[in-house]
Image (tube, rainbow, N blue to C red):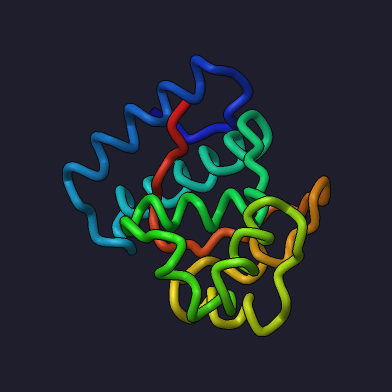
Length: 139
C-alpha cells in the first residue's frame, strides 16, 4: 500500500491492515518499512482525531474510573481528599477539588492534572501526539 491521506472508512481500514502487517515484522525504525509504519501511524492518528474525537472525562468520572480500576473504596481516598464527608461532597458535585487535593490525586493515583482541572462543560484542545508508537482507537 502506498501511504496516502485517509479520507474515508475504506482508506482507514486499509491503513490499519497494513499497519498490522508491518508491526508483525517489527521493522527497524530507519528502514523503509519502519518509515512506512511511522507515516501510516501519523495518517491514522490524524484521521482518528478528526473522525473519532475524544474529550477528556470530567474529574469525578476520572476519579470513579480509577477507583474501579484499582479496586479502591471511598475510605482509600480519604488521605488525598481530606475526609469521608469531603470525598462524598466531591463525588456529588457539591465541592470542587482543591489544588492540594488535585496534587495528591495526581501523585497517588496517576490521574492527569489536566483531567482533574477540567471544569464541567469545558473542553480542551486535542492532546499532542507523544510519538511513542502506533495504537489506534477502537471504534
